[in-house]
Structures are given as C-alpha cells and as structure tokens.
Image (cartoon, rainbow, N blue to C red):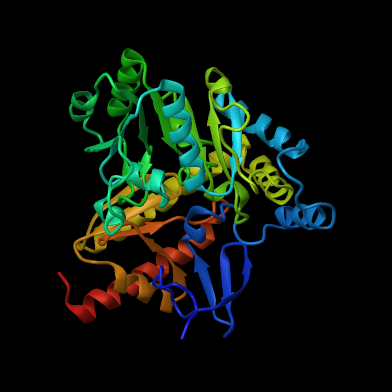
Length: 387
C-alpha cells in the first residue's frame, strides 16, 4: 500500500535512466518518450550540457534568499525579455505559481476584479489559477471558487466581446489549449482579442506554460500570432526538468509589484537559474527553432498518413511539436497499448492523444514512433472491431 495521496493514476513502471528521447525502467525495458514529462524535457532526458551546469552549481552554492542579488537571475531575465521585446521577470517554481503571480499583478495594476478566461482552458490547481481554469471538473469538490472569473467559448470573439464590462481588467488565454484537447486558436480570433484589449484598456495575459520555450517552433507561441501580451507565464520546458517558472510583464507594470507585494522562497534559486539559463541558450537559437518547425511538419505529415489508414482518427491538430490526435473513442486503452510496445504518449481529454516529444527528437525517432503507432492501431482496431 502506498503512503502517497492517490492524486494520480500511476503506472507501475519505475524508470531508472533517461537519455535523450529514451527512458529505461528497472526491468531494462526501453521506451521512446513522446510525452517529455508533459512538455517539460524539451531537450530530452539528461542533456549533457544541462547536466554539467547543474553539477557545477550543486558543488558551488544552492540557496541564499531573494534578499540578496543572484546574478544568474539577471542574466536569464535579460535573455527572456529580449524575446518578449521589453519587460521584467518574476521567477517562481511552477506554471501554477507563474499564473498566480500574473493574476495578482493584473488585479493590482488595474484595480479591477473581473478577468475573462475561456472554456476548456487550464491554468493550474491553486485557488487563483484553478478559478482561472474554464473546466468544471477542476473546480468540483472545492466549494466556491475565487470570484471575478468568467469563461467564454474559445475562438468565439462575439462571446468575448459581450462579456467585457466596466469592471473587466484582463483576459487570460492559451495560444493552444493543451489540457483542453490541443485546440489551436485562430489568428482572426487573436487579432480581435488584441483589438478588444486595446479598445477597453485590458491587460492581456498569455499562458505559455506548455507552449513556450520553443515547443511550437518559436521561443513563445504568441510570436506566431497578432497578439501583443502584457504578461506571459512560463514553466515546464524552462528548466528541462528542474522545477522553475517565470512571469514576464511589460515595463509599464514595474511599479505594481513593489517590495513585499509578492515573493517566492525558492523562486530563482541558483540551481533553477543554472539549468534554465543553459536550456534557454540552447533552444533560443534560430537554427534550432527552425528545426523544430521542420520536425513538426514532418511529424504532422506522417500522422496525416496514419489518419488516412484509420477512419477512427477524426483530426490531427497542433503546431510545432505539440500535436493532438482526436479519435472517435476513448484513448486510455490505446495509451496503455502504446506503452506496452515501448512508446510513451499522453492524453488531452477522453478522446485525444497528445504528442509532446523532445524538441531535439530526430527524424529517425519520429519514424520509429510512427511505426509503433501503426502497429498498435492496426492490432487494436482489428481485435476490438472498433469502427
């Protein structure tokens, strides 16, 4: 019997070694990892450069407090805000914490309590970020949510416009709704969102926790849209597996978070900054990001070929190396069959498979994954006679 709270449906597999795109368990089985810890290990497992800087930092200093200067915070912030064009950074430990910081910043800066979010969105599991999440299943059992949030259908500009009132201070959205089913926002919608924010003087918060750090082929996914956010949030791939999050905000917001208004004991610690700085410097490279786009196109094309073989696949959608595969049936058993055959994939809702391979996955590894998928799908649909 486990002494852990049963907050996850855990597989019995115990991984001992991770190397690149592969994981190895304690029974010497090998797995091709197309989940990357849910978009976390963007450079694969135990990237040698990231490992080396972490080793060096471990032997030097781990933690003091944010009452003192941590030089690597300044260096990493400088790199991040170059992509953001201008602004400031607050470092924390997770995407939930980054979104909490964004919600606090927006409410305090505008003096308004109403924030519009979207149905099927996901922003975290603390009370603020949970309230910003437009999924009732996340709210169930916790009583009254933090007030001030309303949810409108994603990609529906009219519904959004109708929800804005004199107490609205901000809009929070994902460029691609990851947990909501890998739903891609369209640029006409984003253009309208930007126009409404400017017209009504609303702050725009873009949650890049899953889409950021190169996942879609640019440093931040919003860079491929008409959006010009005031605040963005990052985590997951930022530290390649080491816990770290960040909130970036425009310079005009600087005075809102004055000393004592927000904080994080472990946010921006030496270990997190060392791994994140090295990770960002590898990914934030023109050639590297173009390769992500090329591999994303290659994977999408290969999956389209698979779709043509199996009528049970309804749609392939996504961008870069963030892809959802919607089927006519629940996918949990398929995920298990992929796992038995050495391929790790995730889900994004009951009927959607989610692929999030490392950004430096090879074309050969993509081919290997496609081959496993074809074999599993053929056997599964043949044996189950699922139509």
